[in-house]
Image (cartoon, rainbow, N blue to C red; front, side, top):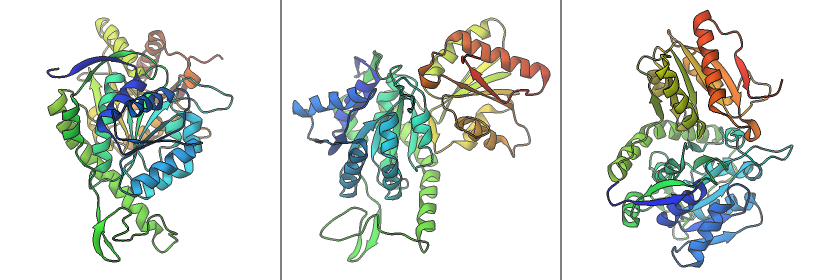
Length: 404
């Protein structure tokens, strides 16, 4: 890692440090466990004069995202962070940020939604916002958190995209756990992130940038009834499709300056796999450990870590899973009344029309921060091997580590 500085950072600090290097124009924040460290640490950078950022301490999470929306609409780079009930309080504004095509970056320290009140990690908060029009990146460790917190600006601001981005990190497991993180020099970050780019639109006084400007007035976020609303939603759909093209370009550019390569999906030991697990976030480190153990025992096990959940990488998933006979999906969120968890439903839909498809089992785990041990992961693989032997799925949805 030539010319990079090795730092001991927890996940929250990794977000804060990356954001300091970006030096956004506005950070609006309201504290909520387990993301509070992010904005606390960033406020110290502001107080110490290490950034030029306008730090806005607001009265609620709804106000935090509202402030970011106003700032981003005026052309500023805007950042915030939240978790769980804080994200739920922002719900209205998440749709507005995306609908107004504002490339805000928001860190989500994933935490279970109440009630009952719970503060450890699961993915119920960000999964609940999966259809709000935000790009979603999920991180396995603090190094990925740092890197994603830089790439997110380029992804959201790409001229073919122009959408807000969530950087998701598991609460406490990542947010409060110190790890080694390689950080880039400030000047490298500045060169990579560069200046915010704007879509050109036709305004009342001719062509102009899509931002509020008294010299060339625009109306943003007006009443939009049945005459044009549908068309504007299609523009967001197209922007997500464009993100599928933009993200690999930005990842490749980031790899040149960091030496760290990222993709939508990260397969591991999938060459001859018979049973594989697909999942998101920090748990995939535990899964990798178990895969290595099983391989030593002669079991043809593998895994696929999904880094980008929105836009959902359909074609990449089909190519990566290939001819694997049995696939287990890890869902750290429940979708009440649905056939399975959120990730499971997307995977099943992806393979529905394929002539060759894996037998898929959903494993809902870790709700409310329930620990997921290597023994539990091993149990999932044993269950998948049973599916392989039988040639059929008996229980489509399984609940791992829960009292019966």
